[in-house]
Length: 117
Image (cartoon, rainbow, N blue to C red; front, side, top):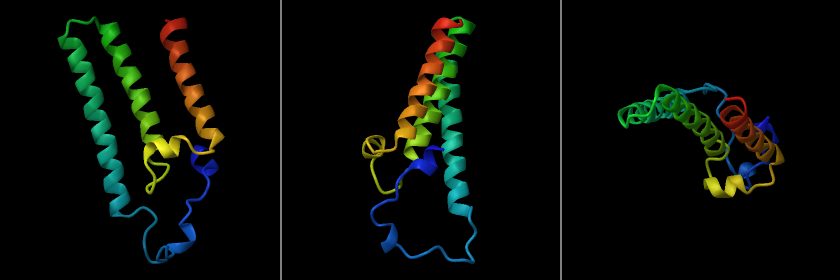
């Protein structure tokens, strides 16, 4: 929903159309997605191992890991909204759905961490 609510980029009509023979999910997109997912996985594992190494209990390490995973996913959503703008400009766009989604996800994270635990 966030991607559908995003307005067009200003130079959209100046770009040539996608070649009809080109795959929708080519090697470039697949490689980038795998790289993003792998780096996120490595980051989450490092956070878990660091928390465990620092003597945190299992519950605290898992909580920190879950929080990192949620924030990393939200960051990926914002980063992938536009390839021609910086993240701050994308975040400040008029996409209300993005703001509602971020607010809802962070509110849900807060509820899980502080109210339901």
